[in-house]
Image (cartoon, rainbow, N blue to C red; front, side, top):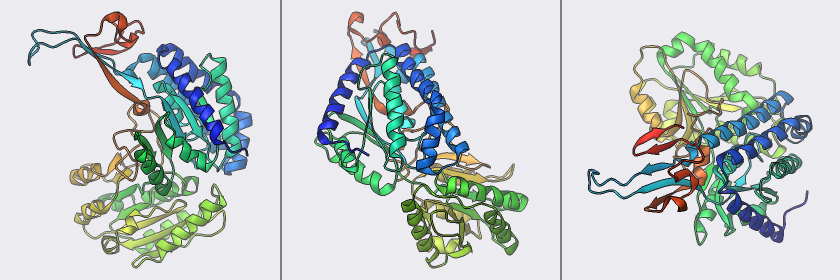
Length: 483
């Protein structure tokens, strides 16, 4: 595969910046049409893209088709948001001499796109978090240009997807350079450093994410770095829920942590239960044994997973319930530990095993659960399984401090694309806990607000003009107005 040169990156960045300057002022309808054109093009090439994705990722056909469908659904959903204009957060305050704190001038605020966004795709989702995944779709929806750094795990798929996206945008009338793809690890560093890069979107490991975040902050002009890095996604089960639904919870838990060979960012890495008697352990072993071993995304990931699993199994107090396997398709593994071991060695709670393995932690008193929460790092999700009428408000309040999404009597591995979704959390789950990489709020990361005070109507951007020529939803003098 050709590696992008520094000169080629320079050309890409200059064309992307020029495209951003042209695209930033287009109407919502035009911008939405570009997103729709990309979605249509990707859907039309499914029979080409899915086999290519399977060849490079080893993921099954059904999973890949569902992921591609998720990707194009997300583009169309964001297109609808663009047309409504809610991403702009257009707010108009007319001059008011009787304003409570004294005369108020005419002041109007709108979100504007940042510029050229650099996006690093993920290895575990070749469509949904890759070339035209969440970050790229959000950047285009925000009005930015996007330069995507293709992941080494699926280079042929990445480049072909990028070609389809570029052709679709060109056919839809978008400015040349609005989207581009680059390759090579060093070029990734150069993309972060480039003076025309206005923000970075990243999904990947904590190690690489932290390195790139520090690089983004060390620039002469630091830029926002929106990284999704890692999460353990603990699941807390109350004694009442364990008594009432032990076998169901055990089997659903195994199904969740082995889904996709455990290579989901929302895989539950911890299950906290009041006891693990032999009958429950047998249920878990049986459920694990029923899961067919599947190839991981790469030999490197499989090797790293086995090393992390074995290191965890060797920690004091950690026992093996199901040993798992080795090779490129390791059988799932399940470990266990008493809460005392976890409280004395918090690394058991924090070390991510990226693959089909998880830990069952047994506690003796529900009061110990909040002590466990205090030792957790930032999480994308935290789940609670409880029975109707139980008071777990203190536990939920504690989990709210460390998690971006709280889940009740369900499992974290589903991350639907919708209006209320928040796929984020305190560090190290993400580098920006106030933002999401999934859902209709995602494009807001790649915008910033600008207020216009006393500016004549003829010089205002269309989103703030009195006549509302774009017919978007706006807040006028404190009241939301929907055209």
